[in-house]
Length: 280
Image 1 (cartoon, rainbow, N blue to C red):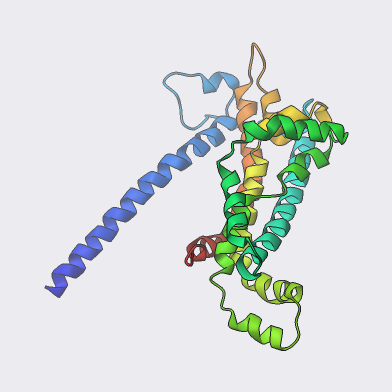
Image 2: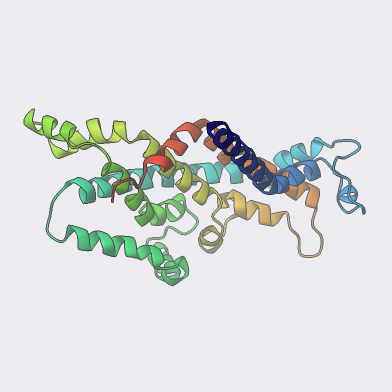
């Protein structure tokens, strides 16, 4: 009987791995197709029946993207500055707010937290015009501040970190209070060092979300030199003619940055997702 159970368990795990591999292939295939298309000529992309691999890989497509008339490296730099700035802002503000909601006791704490988290159901299109008016009155149009500051406060980030903070034992904080530590010192020297997985998860979510953002930069940025990478990709698509091989090359370059970030922070990301939300 035990041998039969082990056989069923092994067969179930094998089938599950096969299904996961098929699901992973479905998600990876568009990226793979974009990569091989970036090595083709424009004519090879529209050959029917399509060929997966080009006969002669054209690596110069990447050189054309990086050194052509469109300042794509500048767009990459703009996106990097905005993504890093907003990620730092979100992590700092969300950590401070989450610590207050998770550890500090004050009147109306639970109600205020529910209201704050409730803002997640409000779509950006509702607040887009008021935010634009504020940014314009501050004379931030076509600046990094317009791209960074409005997105530095995240209800999702606060919720994520609060749930993680609730899983941390209070014994360390009580011992620190007995030793005379202030709330801020406890937050800085105890809570944050123990929260690296959750902070890494929030950083990845925020960085990738900011890197892929299109609507807000489209509204607030007019100057070419201030465009982000998503706006830069749209420049490659002309009104009557689109060089799709260059679009694919630019796309591969654009997704390489968040992909590398995830590779380096994968361990913390998985751990943070696994531990967050274990305690209500």
